[in-house]
Length: 198
Image 1: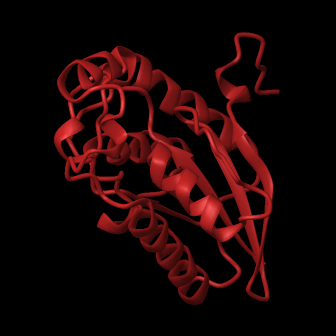
Image 2: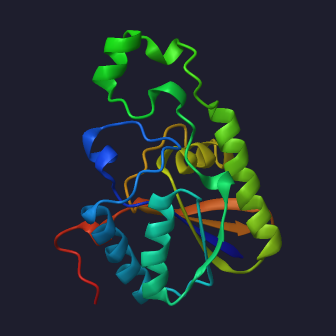
Image 3: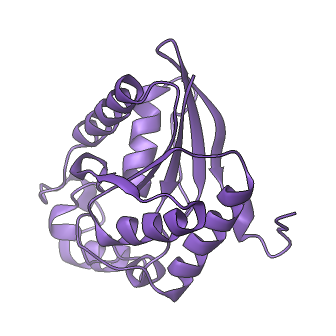
């Protein structure tokens, strides 16, 4: 069995402001760094992980580095395939600004946004490659909300018609003889004020 833990990066200022980030390289804010530390603490006390991979965007890399320090694991590889969806012209805008610029049906406009199928395809290809290359390992992948959500919808369409992925949530997938199962989805218990590590 190969186990993959999908983690969304910690929160950024643009997340807090409700701005679309896409491939804009926005760093973590202080809250995001604390979130990354908290999930690192949690993971250090649970089952051992073997490898960490990250998106090539700085908010994911920094999240992976903070987790990696707690687990004493360096980032194995930074990979562009698990970066966020390219949001084209809407990057840096809020919903209110999008409606003001392009109207309430802005989602139907051609604004240079990457197609969902392209995002899910690269996510699934990456996970399949991990399973082939690191069979039997426990692997963390630090990525982004849309990438993780769309990948889950493609990989397990009967389980996930819709998804929402919180900052520093962990979703755990197991692959057994090329069959996928999700044993934990969008878990953020490490962020709860009453969460205890022991």
